[in-house]
Amino acid sequence: MKDNYNGALQQPISSGFNAFSTTSDVIKGIDLHGKTVIVTGGYAGIGLETVRTLASAGARVTVPARDTGKAIKNLAGVENVSIEAMDLADPASIDTFAEKFLRTGQPLHLLINNAGIMWVPLQRDKRGYESQLSTNHLGHFQLTARLWPALKQAGGARVISVSSYGHQMAPFNFEDPNFLVREYETLQGYGQSKTANNLFAVELDHRGKAAGVRAFSLHPGSVNGTDLGRVAPMELFRQMGTHDADGNIFPEVAAKLKTIPQGAATTVWCATSPQLNGIGGVYCENADIAELDNGSIAKRYDDPLSLRGVQPYSLDGANAAKLWALSEQMTGVVFTGG
Image 1: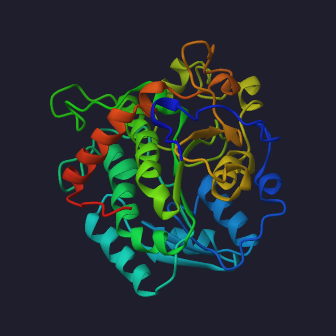
Image 2: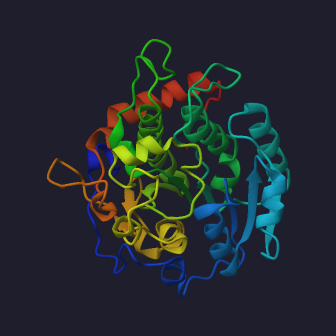
């Protein structure tokens, strides 16, 4: 079984889906009865849509939530769902959640690492780690490691990392990942954390496939109506050419954004599609494997559909192994995979 080190498997497979495919399209014909799923951040935006879709196909879904009150409110009426407290920036709460889940003795068929933050000012967790790296990557690394026995027990599991086109904004900075020396720039922090998601999927798949655990990362697309930009200064959007001087999104840009069911489609496809059987470590978008971006894809922020492709540096085999070792060191969690 080949790895996706350096993008060896990174080529579209003509899935039959596209940027406008919805969760309803990709879940058609998929039966998840008897499957157990965990979705971080599964109570808002594309995470909530992911939970609804998987639960509607018969899965039992657990949603670990930082804001349990919001989760209870947003998930009201969705069957087959349970909510537990967990904060990805708090290592002790990750351990508590994972230990409680493992005590149930259930196998874990799907772990969807969906939660994320973006455009935040410089903030640090209790360990001094930059918050976007801490939440978007390190918390999910620790959660995956702690849940490994249940993933292995499934006899065929998938771990999905919701990454972003934002990985193109920055490679991983191994010299100063926490902005202790360099000046903080929020999109550099975000881009680095999303590159980490891609590298994690590559290395997790390498280590996990012998135990039947496959890993994927993905770009949901530019989606209208999510919480992700809630703290972003409007000036950033104006600079990208998406909003006017009064802070209103240009109608022609809004018309090209995905709906939430379109934005969650790639997550659901990665998690459930038989088209990906025997493949792993790849970065996906528009419910297909993405194209490797060697500089030939023209991009414009006012045309969200042009924001596609995956940077080779985020699939680099040596960096994937290096990040794994650094993540173990930073979290103090030695991954006993395989």
